[in-house]
Amino acid sequence: MQYVSRAPRPPLDGLIDDLYYLRGAPPYARLTLPPMPAALLIVNLGAPFRIRSGTGLETAQYADGCVITLPTRALEFGYPIPTRSVGAHLKPWGLAPFLPMPAAELRDRPVTLEQVWGRAAVATLRDRLATASGPHQMLTLLEDELTRRLGEHAGLGLVRHTGGVLAAARGAVAIGGLSGAAGVSSTHLAQRFKELIGVTPKRLARTYRFAATVFAIDPAGPVDWGRLAESAGYFDQAHFGHEFRAFTGLTPTRYVEVRRRFLHEHPGHVMEGWPLPAD
Image (tube, rainbow, N blue to C red; front, side):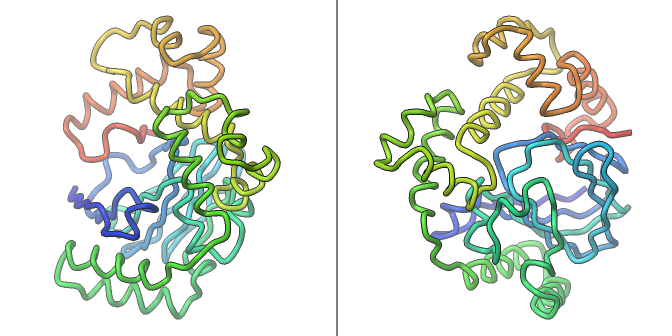
């Protein structure tokens, strides 16, 4: 599988972690993506893919691409074989300048790219990407499109600053002090977060803390769950286990078993690290 990634130039670097190109056969037909502190924009250039957000919900098909604001529950991706797409991993607040609606309306509800930018605009972009000379030109085309669409958004500076504090501390911040430090009320801060990110500061902090904890796990070796829970600031191991199930749908030990399966079956794969086999 081919994966090409690079960071965008200013001013997009304050909104986007990286632009990427993905092509080839995925390691599994279905992958589960636990929530992480990021948003996602995908321009699909291959056969349609499918996404299911939450258990018991129907799987939706996406032909042109999709937009996903910061998720609060695991997503299941069904990839065509082969798959081909160009996209962006955005910071939690990174989608706001490109959305015609509040992010809260899209919480755990992925929508097609056409629903955000319109059919004609997306068709033109996909045609240009499909005829590009290679991955690097494709990433430049996507970057140019995002730069062209970039606009002002009320409250973005406040949310970026406060979200940056949460990111730097990996969520280990007293939420009550964030609004005071920013010089606004807690209600105002929560409203801005919901509008631009889709969740409250407290929920974003939980997601940062969980992500940092998961990335600290070495699935190849033994895991001291008690020590891990304590170092991550969880009240006790039971609370840690509850958070794990809430975010992934799996117990901590089952999560490691699935990660080890990925490592064993696809060592060194470009997608290893966060997605999990859903089969």
